[in-house]
Image (cartoon, rainbow, N blue to C red; front, side, top):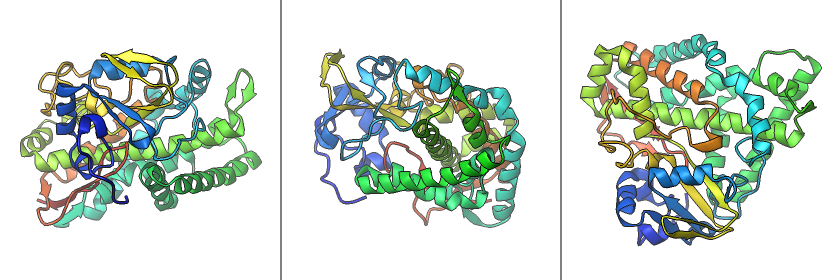
Length: 395
């Protein structure tokens, strides 16, 4: 990311690409909750940032004044639409989401758990017994790439290309629209070739075949809808999950008590997954303001954007006692890691399964590990937050 003017006041000049935000945004959000609690910046052509759970929820559920036609904040005008259902508003949203739901039910996802375990074990075979590895690069980032390839019916060997597209769309593309366009075009052409193979030999049991056969009101998906949804599933199904798995392993590498407890009490893993999702939620979405609105005394100007920081909402002490403390057996945990409102993530069952299996397999094979003090941990830039490097020492 190119050099940027430093932030002088987080309440009036915030920048989610500032190095301090990338490294550790939580104190920034705490400060804003106490001061604002809705910040604004003139950067990115004007953006608001609510930091309280109730405000984030109110905006997420207000589809009349806050549109999902634009769901990213870029330096230049973000494109509208193109990735249904996440970029659709009611009433079109309902049909676009309903098409996908059968493929992501708990029962449908359960069929993919055996392959997920195989992937984790194959990856662990490569690192177990070594003195060190990178828990993000060698493990977390490989699992969803390989599983999504499995679900799409495309070669796992293409994973390096998927990672390039994700880096271009979610990080480099924030400040370079040409990168976004190129990556989008390349992804569309990739899926066009795969779709042509299935049109020639229909009846496959994969997500591309599923969407080719899908109908809304008796009609097949338009090309824009079809390819936009495939791009969405690939990006959303990979980057958010690898970020979450990486954050879990980073936490366990830096919190010996939690690591030891999960090794001793593996039945706690599902509860711990929910708490890690709350504490280290990876996804921040955006909305476009299309009608005048007032929330907490702040006037929202039409034409500007809102960053819906689900991670900030999850750290709101008004909603979660000891919000800044990770409690792996937290009893009440209505976190917003998968979003709020009509765009709550349809892939939540898949993500939960992948994170749970990844932790179960890792802890069974590598119960003792710590951060390597000689190497840095690095975090992603942009609106999906997760560690990109987690160098660890094993044993």
